[in-house]
Structures are given as structure tokens and as C-alpha cells.
Image (cartoon, rainbow, N blue to C red; front, top):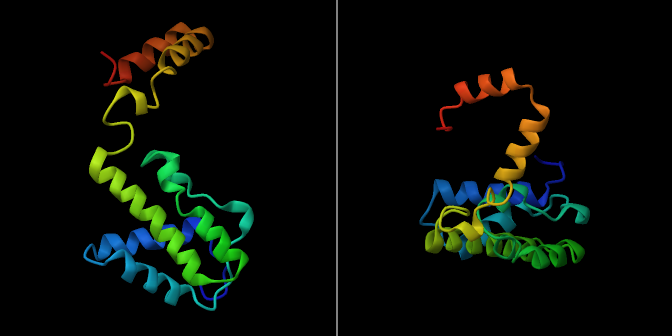
Length: 144
């Protein structure tokens, strides 16, 4: 990874890995470690400030909390600022999960399948031949 340009998602995944491997690491220590690890490396591109897999863990307003700091860090070529933003997004996501549970597990409001199950079933029944539908239902253990 010496000369490769990391993405924001790569740096976020690295922060998650550090925290997972060493849960006692404070967010302040994590920020310092990230800034040290990435110092001298090319900055992430500005066109792709996103962490796709986080959308399933917490609401967008939580996991994107640090992205303005990341953007400013990239613009000013400041790894401390980038690390601050990454750690803020990680902290917000972890706090959300510890306080409310994983996204979609605590209430119907956050369940992403609400409202699409009926439409999906309607679309599938319209376009899937009956014999394939029966086969799919037979092989699906979740359907009752």
C-alpha cells in the first residue's frame, strides 16, 4: 500500500480493523495511529467520499458525520484532519449500534424491507413462471 491511493472507505475499514483487533484503543489513539500510518501517502480522491457498507450499520446522518472533516483534510492535505473525520464517523456508528442495535433490528421504521416486500412479490409473481415460483418456494426455508 506504499504508493497506492487509498479511498475513504479503505481508511475507514482500516480504522475498524484496528478497533476490532484492539477494542481498548481510544478514539484519540486511533486517530493518531491512522494519521501516522497514512502520513506521506497520497490522499484519497474527493469524488468518492463514501463508505458504502456503513449504510447497513447506521443511519446516514451518523456514518457520514465525519465526512466534511475528511473532505477538508483532503483539500488541505492534512492527514490529521482526515483521520479525525474517519474516527468521528466510526465513533458515531459504534455509538448508534451500542445504543440502538444494528440498523433495521429495532423497529419497523428502520427496517429496509418494509414497503418493498409486497411490490417484490407482485413483480416476481408477474414475471416468474409458476413452476419456477413453486420450486423457489419449496427451496426457501424462510417462507412458511
